[in-house]
Amino acid sequence: MAQNAFVTRDPCGSEDTIESGAQMVHPHSNTSGRYLIPDHSQSRQQDHNDVASYGLSVSPSSAMTTRELQEYWQGVKSERKPVKLLFEIPSTRTVEHVLSKYVVYQIVVIKSGSYDAKRVSIERRYSDFERLHQQLLQDFSEELEEITLPRKRMTGNFAEESITERRVAFKDYLACLYAIRAVRRSTPFQEFFTSQELRRAHGCLRGGQYSRALDLLLPALDLQEKLAQHRPALVVPTLCAVMVCQRDLDDPTSAFSTGQRALPLVRRYGMHKYRCPLLALMVDLGFQLGHPIAQMQEELTRIKDAERGPVSLLSLKELVVQEFT
Image 1 (cartoon, rainbow, N blue to C red):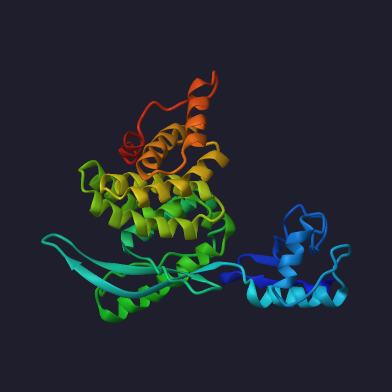
Image 2 (cartoon, helix red, strand yellow; image 1 turned 180 degrees about the horizontal axis):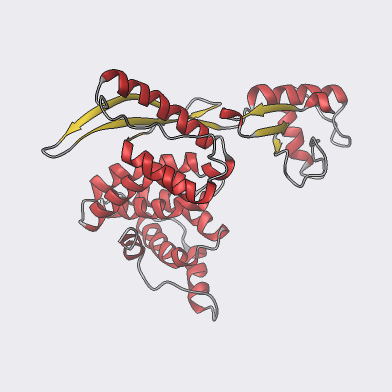
């Protein structure tokens, strides 16, 4: 079986991941075997569908043959590459005020392994990188022993050569941080890419500037979905904010569709404070659009009548406005 497994190395050599088919196992996990084999205890129909996608056939009453397994793993290796993120810093701009001058770096986050149509970009300055590094050192000082933040110079910080050099250094710095599993899953790393835009968006939302808020929320949502694949529930507050904006912009169809994305996550991860307000808005929108809402009405009534469990009495808009307040 060893010949069917293959090893990929994260950037900066910080983390090796051993892949065997559609499953992945870290070398330091509690898995007893060094390599994983296909789990035939799971749905046999799924196995059949997976293999059929590569032009293979599997007898419903037997496991795959050795040759089929080899072809299957080759297909997985070539067609189902693990999703990784790449960080590009294609440009910079210098901002000058009366009492200050600084360089802003454009950061583009790209999903590798497949075509990424949503290459969302943000802008950050040196002080933002510096703040991130100090926050990470509080919990990951050992992991960051060999990762250094590009230093400022005493002079020449605004020279074109210095800016270009630091732009490349910041790109490598983000790649090295992302290569460390614990770091890329940490709150400071996640918030580095979204917190500024989300704060501005919620400020616009509180001021009734729903169109401007939506323009900020949607790119932030795309970034969150790329960065927080391990914690899908992190996108729920942003989805709810998007839904509120779409409703107040008289776009009930989009608002209901966004709610359909958020509701399964709220149920799955027990996000109690969002469940009632979200269901209530979904029922109102569904009634307006003529969608079947009986099941959601029953769920809402059941939760409100339950003797146990926290139930939010706020509307979804009121709940969203509380974010970053």
